[in-house]
Amino acid sequence: MSQIDDLPPLRDVIRKHDLAARKSLGQNFLLDLNLTMRIARAAGPYDDVTVVEVGPGPGGLTRALLSAGAMHVIAIERDSRAIAALNEISGRYPGRLTVIEDDALTFDPRPLLQGRRARIVANLPYNIATPLLISWLTAEPWPPWYDRLVLMFQREVAERIAASPGSKAYGRLSVLTQWRMSPKILFDISPKAFMPQPKVTSSLVEFLPRPDPLPCDRRALEKVTEAAFGQRRKMLRQSLKYLGRDPAELLEQSGIAGTARAEEIPVEGFVRMARLYAARLPSS
Image (cartoon, rainbow, N blue to C red):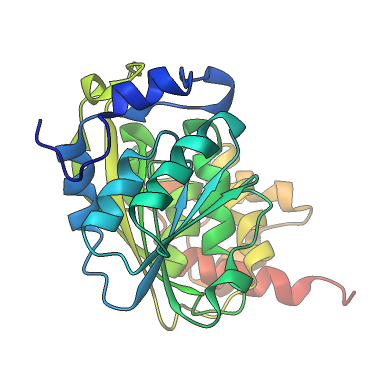
């Protein structure tokens, strides 16, 4: 393994700061700096871009992002044990790394951006990966405050995100993501690359925000997809009854057969149903 800077190897950093990965925090550290550089290169170029990184841990990807040319990195880390290690990286790259000890699920980095272009790049903790993705793709206003997401997920989750209608992996997460994003699986990463080793393969996924997604109330889309995929083996004329009313008119006006199943319906079909569903709701 080649060094990307003159900082200590990550295993030494982990020993020095007692950074054994904690399952409760969903931590699986990437120790191969060649691999973190591959991820950083996949997320570039970084002309005038501030990178927001979630869960940097001992800082392997942080170092790669800075070495690859990121103008500035805002690293959000919940684990207080990692802060000292990250501050050492900040000393090596003066003025280019801001370390924030906080919970990424509640912390808003936008005030720190000062209007600059931003990109989110992260080896996400497994236990909060999907909630974080949902929070980013439902950001308002749209287009969002970031130009791209490059994120690590378990392979199974990545396949659900990028799945096409008609496939077994296609589901609610596919629809919610693809309504506003164009996702693409870039490459897989073996469990052996992590410490500790997870039981599953991981995948790096790129998300490009759609500049003009189909107009739709996000909450209505969430309700319709929840009902449709909650009982995905049933026909929509049955599963959509969980919306609290007879779905026949909703399906007819959407141009969708009542005998269809959720996995057969493209994103556009769900958007049509969600718009009609939202129009039926009483004004608040």
